[in-house]
Image 1 (tube, rainbow, N blue to C red):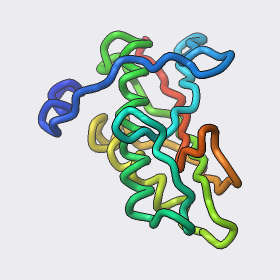
Image 2 (cartoon, rainbow, N blue to C red; image 1 turned 90 degrees about the vertical axis):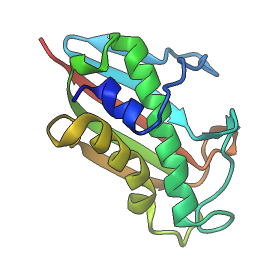
Image 3 (tube, helix red, strand yellow; image 1 turned 180 degrees about the horizontal axis):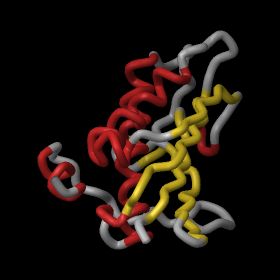
Length: 153
């Protein structure tokens, strides 16, 4: 099944690439690798603000990370044209706006990882990953995630 068919079956429509909020580009391709800049979680088109372990729980953070996955796939599609050109999702790096005592960053990040795996399938979607707790994220967002993908020759 194609990536587009999986997205359609899940009822997911990918958004257009967001305009960068600072001095960077949304993606860079070098060789067969595509590097996507960090995407913050958004809700209703605005930054999804919150701090895990203080104003948000793990399940809400996981939903925010899932929303980031959808935005990342929209940017990846803009970068490569057809998501079936992706040979592998290589790595995700997740920054979770966390209270000092919050230790479930890995579970929050699963919201992104699980959707990527479901959309791309286990062979393409299984990826390496880092999940960090940080004191703050731009605009007060609860989660920011970046992605590296490899393209087919």
